Image 1 (cartoon, rainbow, N blue to C red):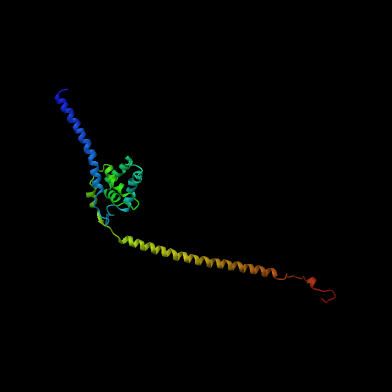
Image 2 (cartoon, rainbow, N blue to C red):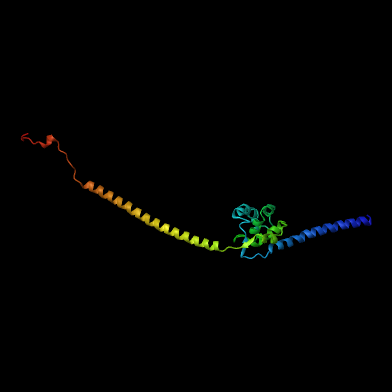
Length: 208
């Protein structure tokens, strides 16, 4: 083999090694990029960008197939899970931002943040998601608590009224039953009524 061929082979091997190294080293950088976004807890993803209806559509794609990974049963998300993550990333980036950086209280936040990087989502989520941030509105939470308390108080009042009405109906039924029983007893104690015919009422020797 000539020197030129050796150089060509070595150059090819070097290119392959560099490509593999860049792919391996790029993944942690991407994970860090997507998982260490400095988003404050006082902010949230705008509901205009990702509405509740959008969440109902896209959330199953990020949770159902990814459940074994999020529950720490699998070390990496499955192919089906990553397909769902990439699908949501393409169709609704705000919803991906919402469920990655602002998931529900029962979600695995750490693993959820790593999913885009592990699924090779190449988008810069820190930059993209920051465009959808708005200040978190705390008032609805307080008002919802107040509404729950009002509903609970209303239920107690309705329950109390139902108990009173039930007791009143029971008293009425018992009273009617006692009245019927008394009438039946009175009917039994009355003397039998005999009806005399005209022939029996006329005594012998009497003038007619």
